[in-house]
Length: 86
Image 1 (cartoon, rainbow, N blue to C red):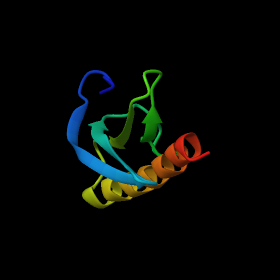
Image 2 (cartoon, rainbow, N blue to C red):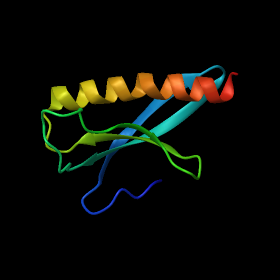
Image 3 (tube, rainbow, N blue to C red):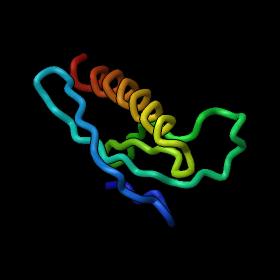
Image 4 (cartoon, rainbow, N blue to C red):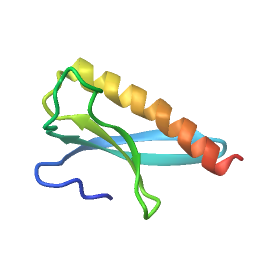
């Protein structure tokens, strides 16, 4: 799993189904040092080793975290589909 830095906390996994494959994506909560009015923090990531994951804002409310996970999961499906099904 990708090390995000100090304070990253694993909060669970999300399974995404792409074709006949299932990918388990770790979900990590981190604190972001960004202006809250800018682009929402977090989302799906893919690192150079081919590992995938989801980052969420550790300071967000549970409903915001759930929305961030849903959006990142949809992004993950699009990315993985383009990579493996094309």
